[in-house]
Image 1 (cartoon, helix red, strand yellow):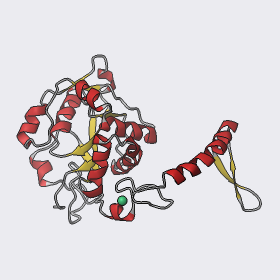
Image 2 (cartoon, helix red, strand yellow):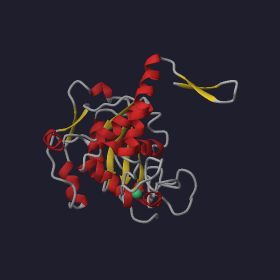
Image 3 (cartoon, helix red, strand yellow):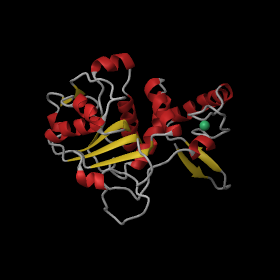
Image 4 (cartoon, rainbow, N blue to C red):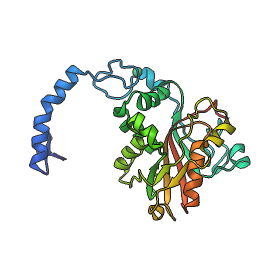
Length: 267
Ligand SMILES: [Zn+2]
């Protein structure tokens, strides 16, 4: 579909294919009906948002987007701009097995609700918006990557949960960016306990040896720039283990991209 100004200064919409025109004509009354039956509401608290789809002003104002200045490796926000390329003490003391970490927002308020909605309440309708925020936060990493790889679930957990929230986010980022999604290249070979409630060391032990590359898919990783996608970054034990597997398989560059990031105040 393309918009074209006509001589009267009015905009007319020119459809490149008749089927698009027909679809628009047929769906228009239905979308008005849908707005009547399901008025546009905030994705988090459900309050009516008038004509604007997304979040209400209150939920929106509680979101802490992660913006520069931040550590170029770990993406930890700095309270002061210390100049380009400055690393956090944490990144220097414990260099991670990935090249950089980027996240859209800190894991609190509405962001936590969005994560829980997608993960535990099957709110897959939230994924396109969340993927859009992640794409922006990726800071060009998605545009310059060869493929997006979601952190996989073990197949038994996948059966219980029906879908993988990381794969859902990666799928929408792939369609927004036009980059390939490799949903079956990295697999979870060890059924791990839930990371929630475990300390940093226990989390590390829990996910050691948990990931592998699917046999025959090694070329999809070797020499490639990969964006590894997950919903939340907490201690980083899971994405670190997944990154080590990708690195061992010859990945040239790994960006970890998550929707939320557990963070205290900026340092
Ligand atoms: Zn709201």
